[in-house]
Length: 206
Image 1 (cartoon, rainbow, N blue to C red):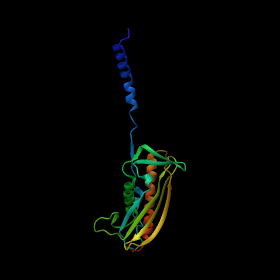
Image 2: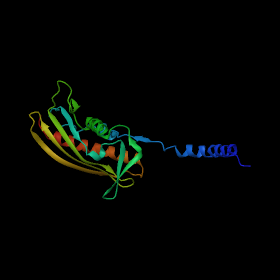
Image 3: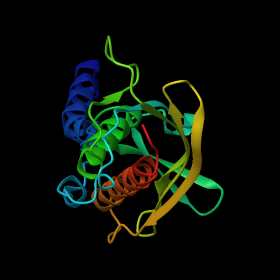
């Protein structure tokens, strides 16, 4: 005879069997975090930081503007010309905008003799001889393809006059089809921008 007690027992047994499966379905993949890093080769470049006999000007970096599509923790890659991919489980350890600026400053220390070298907004009492404003147009890549940095930047003197304006466009092969290789390639792109800026500043008279 099938009673209500039997039905309840069968229901409890079914729940006991399915609970482990439901628990397994609830687990998500672990999130992996990445960061840009200064280029050790650029940081150790001690030669040719300034023209012979030329004093070293102070230099300020910023403001640095980023496109809105990069205003997120998830790493953004491209799939063809019109599709963007936002990684759920591969993220920057901090806002990419901040990581980019700090890495750029670190790279610049290896290729310029500028002192001080500061980020906008300037510390109290500091007014650099030159200010570099940067508008990043693109900073992404394709897994297994190439990483790209495109930026417009200008150099402004202490009087507020723009004395140089330039567009930099760089591409790097990650050398691998994963996010670690992509972050490494993007780090090299930042180093190349630092070299571009340093080369221009060396042509200016403080």
